[in-house]
Length: 219
Image 1 (cartoon, rainbow, N blue to C red):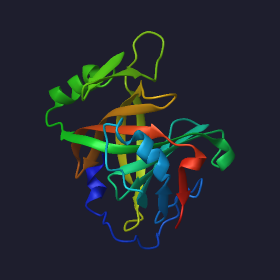
Image 2: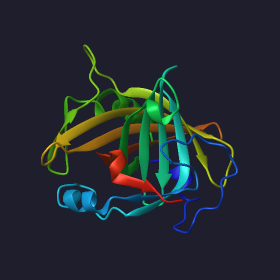
Image 3: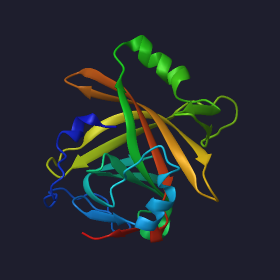
Image 4: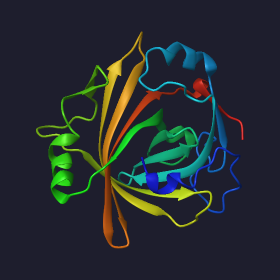
C-alpha cells in the first residue's frame, strides 16, 4: 500500500522527524517497535504472511479521520507493513479501541476508469473472500448492501513534512486461527491525484491483532 512513499523508506535507522504527527502507545514517527517473539512463533505456521521482523522502524504515519469521534492512525514500517491503531472519543491511550499489525501482500495498478469502477462495485466487498486457499468472512457489516468503506488518509514521512493525501475504499475480513486468534484481510482500492492525474491501485494486506503485551516501543 502507498507505493508513493515507499521509495523514501530505508532499512537504516530513521532520522528525527521534522513534522509533528500523532503519537499513541509510544508509536511515533522515527520510532522503533519490538514485537513479542513468542507470539510470532505461535502464529508463524498459521499466517499467510511469514518472516515478520521482530524489530520494526516507523518511517511514515497515516491519519484517517472517520468522523468527529473516530480516528485511525497507521504507523508504516520498514518491514513493508503498518501498525494500525483505532481511537474512539479522543486521541489518548485511554481511547484506543483496537491495535493491529498489517503487512502488504500485493499491490496492483488499476489503469482504466472501467476497471476502477468495477473494482469499487464488485471487487472489494463480499460476504466472504477466498484468498490464498483460505476463506475470510466480512467484518464490517451494514444493513442491506455493504459497499467498501470510504476514507481519506493523510500520510507523513520522516523526510517530507507535507502530507500526501489518498482516497481509499476498503473492506476488512477475518478468519479464525487456533484458539481465539484471528488473521485479518484488508482489501482496498486507493486513489491519489498526482499532477492532476489519478493514480489508482488495489492493495491487499494481511494482519493480526495486538495486545499491549505483544509489543514494546524501544526507540
